[in-house]
Image: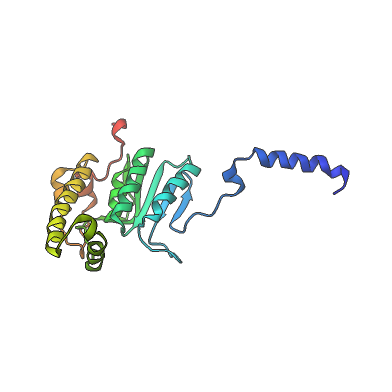
Length: 223
C-alpha cells in the first residue's frame, strides 16, 4: 500500500466502524422467513431443506431476532399448516408485544391461528383460508412423556398418568378458549372451533370469520 492510498483506507475504516453491526454481518434469514417491505412473511409451506416444514420451537428465537433487526416491520404475513402448539403460543406473545398486524396469504391452520389472532388488524387475502380443529397428542409422544416424567410426577401407574392427562386437557381447553375470547372472538364461535377432530379441518367462510371477530379491518384502538 503506497502512502497516497492511506487517507482513503483510513476513511473507509472509519465508515465501517460507524455502521451498525447488523449491516456489517447480517446472516441470511431462515428459509421460512422473508422480509417484504413492512411485512415479515412466515411461510412454513415453502420448500425447506434441512428443517421441519411446520411451526417449531426454533422459530421463536428467529422471530425475536428478525423483528429486532427489522424495526420497520408492522405486519406478519402467514402461510402455515400449523405445528408446535407451544411455539405458536410463544410467537403469538411476541406478535402481541410488538403490536403487529397479521394477515393470511394462503392457509393458516391449527397453531398458526394462534399467531394470526395475536394481530391488531387481521386480514385474509382473497383465495386464502383459515382452518380450525381439535388439538392432538400422538401416541408415541404420550408414551415418551410418561417415561420421561413418571418419576418426577410420582405416577405409580399409567392410570395415574391418564388421570393427570384428563385434568391437564381440561385446563388446556380452558386456556385456549380464554385466549380466543380475549382476542375478540365470539364465545359461541370459539366453542365451535373445538368441534372438529384433529384429522379434519373446518374452514369457515369469510363472512363467518368477520362476524365472529376472527377477521377485523381495524385495530381495537382505531375503532
